[in-house]
Length: 133
Image (cartoon, rainbow, N blue to C red):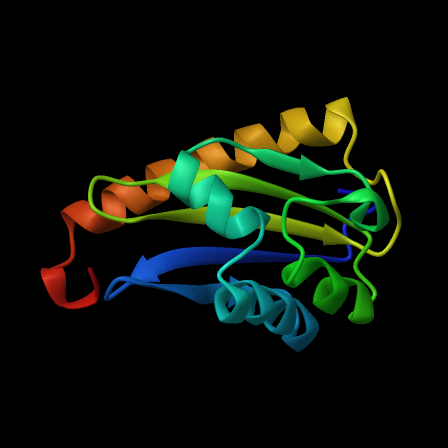
């Protein structure tokens, strides 16, 4: 993704969203802003099992507690896609410091990446116990 400045994977662990992989501490911080406020595209992608594209956080109205925090971290656009295994679920989250970073080509590529990650989750779910579910 040429314009992505960070990426993370959020999974439900013990009933709570958890960042299990991230490209930087800054991305983890943005994820935690979503968890702390209970709002944001990664949470909604997981809950509603649909991908969410935020072209411009400056124009976004869906998550009033989360948006200012993300903008304070320099984030301007987000793409979150649901991940689903046999027992695990969560989201793949792409962050950018520019507006409108994730157009149609990036969305298509992210959809392929999320499908691959979901297959990995399914395989992992089949080979692990319930300790992390």
